[in-house]
Each structure stands twice: as C-alpha cells, then as structure tokens.
Amino acid sequence: MSVEVEESSASIAVARRAESSERSGALSTVVRDVRLLLIALWLGGAVFFSAAVAPSVFSVLRARDVPYANEAAGTIVTRTLSILNTGGFIIALLLLASAFLFRQGVKRRAFITETVSLVVVAIATGVGQWVIAARMLSLRAAMGQPIDDVAADNPLRISFNSLHEFSVAALGLAIIAAAVALLVIANRGRKAEVRG
Image (cartoon, rainbow, N blue to C red; front, top):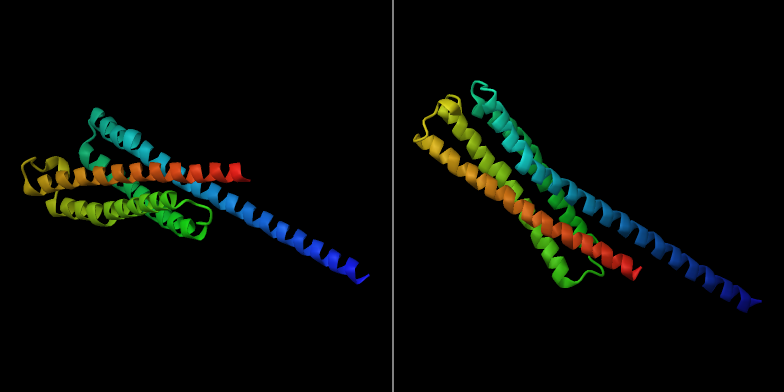
C-alpha cells in the first residue's frame, strides 16, 4: 500500500513539474512575441516616418504655397519625431530588461548582439530627443522669427541645419540597430520553436 502511495506521489510531482514547465514555456513564448511586436512596431513607424511622413509634410506644404511652409512642416515633424524618439527609447529599455530576464537558452553572441543593438537604439533615440531636438528647438527660438525668414548664411541657421543632419543620422542609426535587434529576437523565437 505504501509503495502505491509513493508511486502516486511521485507521478503527481512529475505531472506538476511538467505543468509548471509548460506554463513557463508559454510565458516565454508570449514575452518573446510581445518583444518582437514592440520592436517591429517601432521599426515600422520609424521607417514610415523617415520615408513618407517627413518628406511628404514638407513637399505638400511647399507645393501649396503655405506661408512659412518650412516653419509649419518643421513643427509637425518635430512633434511626430518626439513621439517616435520617446517611444523608441522606452521600448529599447523594456526590451533590454526583458532580454536579461529571459536569457536562458540564448547563445552568448546572439545575446550580446541583441543587447548592443538595443543599447544603440536607446542611446540614439535618447540623444536624438533630449540633446539634438532640444538644441534645435532652442536655436529656432533664438532666431526670433520663422525659419523661412532666416538667411541661409545666418550662424543660427547653419547650426540648425548641421543639427538636422545629426538628427537624421541618429534616427538612421536607431533604425539599423532596431532591424538587427528584430532579426535576433525573431531568430531566437524560431530556434525555440525548433527545440519545442
């Protein structure tokens, strides 16, 4: 009788461990999918902003001969870029934290690549938002008039244009790093499905 009870207890323990492992695997899958979704959404938004939104705003307002078209377009792009940069910064930090929490079973090289890529996204979007964009806004305020009325050889306008190039480069770098992170996260998921 006691042998049967011990065997029954052992089989219950094994079943509980299997159930716990199943729940842990399901949680890992959900977290991995959410991580993939977040980086894909940000990357898609960043590419769409760079390739469609920013150029379209400037070209449409200029084509319609809107007074102070560059000032208006710049304001729209600045607000949109602010959302994009802040979102990229927050998403990169969340993905970094979750990369460390769910590191088990990830090869060292893939983990380092993912981590470095996400750090680059966080730094590029953070610098783009709180350093470059902030300085550009202060330059626009210092000009004291719409940017359309400021001469191209004005030192403030020259500095502004230079910072604009840095802003484009920072976002471009963040996009490349996010694409690398996306591929690594997706590859991690594919390998987990093969193992499972």
